[in-house]
Length: 211
Image (cartoon, rainbow, N blue to C red; front, side):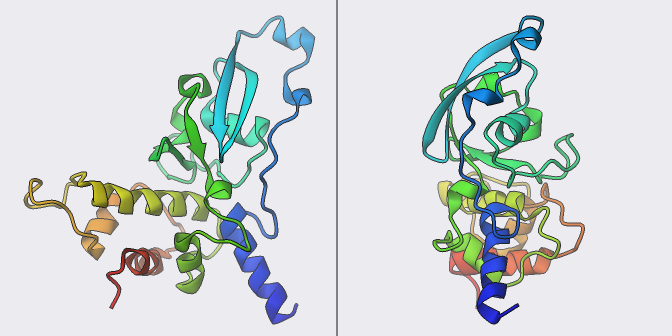
């Protein structure tokens, strides 16, 4: 593999959650359940704006947002890890705020704007946080990386908006993007490879606080 091919492969991991794939296609009508199954399954129409494109599907009311994104919208960058809201691998942005998509039903987000890792950037046009993760090796196996990046983007926005955290001595004074502050806010995103220090380095660069 040439150096250029290697760099493109790394960018593919960061941009789409899988090497060389930038999954942006929205679901076809064929993705809806067969007629005989739909007759026995309670469904509701759901309209979501996913990564800037709007689509409508009739979904089983029990479908989580995570499963809707992966199985119906075919956006597989968002990962299913624990499926209990404990690992953060499924983190996406809903109307600009991060959530664990495995803990919420798709029908609860009718009309909401969803941003997944595929919507943040593409291999040839990376989001600054994606580029910083590559530069600082903020990942190893890459499985948790899409959730880590989505959460990192949201964390810096939370700090900018003055959302308080547990480690602030004075919640009226506002927060700063220090390493301690970012570690606390990122504590819900687990990396079993242990790339935490590099993740903080990447976030610090984007925040403009890295020495």
